[in-house]
Image 1 (cartoon, helix red, strand yellow):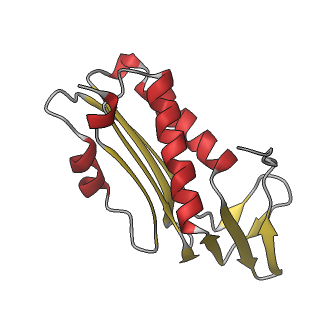
Image 2: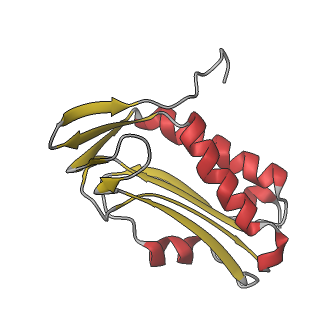
Length: 155
């Protein structure tokens, strides 16, 4: 099957992430493995300055973010040619602790074909290049959370 015919889903949404629906969309009759990563809102952060989070607010410029998500999916297909399906979904809006915020899923015929590494690459690249902004709100105030990546012209 040509890469252009393989199932790829990417979206920015305010709705709950429906794992069963996404898996149905990226699974082929030849699929035997799915590696799924889901980012969650933490109510307590122990890394760095320990603090509580009441909720997170995610914002995005959707057309640009979805174009970058497609880029991430294309990069996965280039690096792991055995990947069958890819789903990349980012939630925006006000999200409370224990809520999924992002999901990356990759499917393949077998688990030992790089499907874990492909999903890991997908979440790392999403965090690096997809323009989604996060504001953390806690009992001590609020602040925008900055990443390390600064895009270069043309990226």
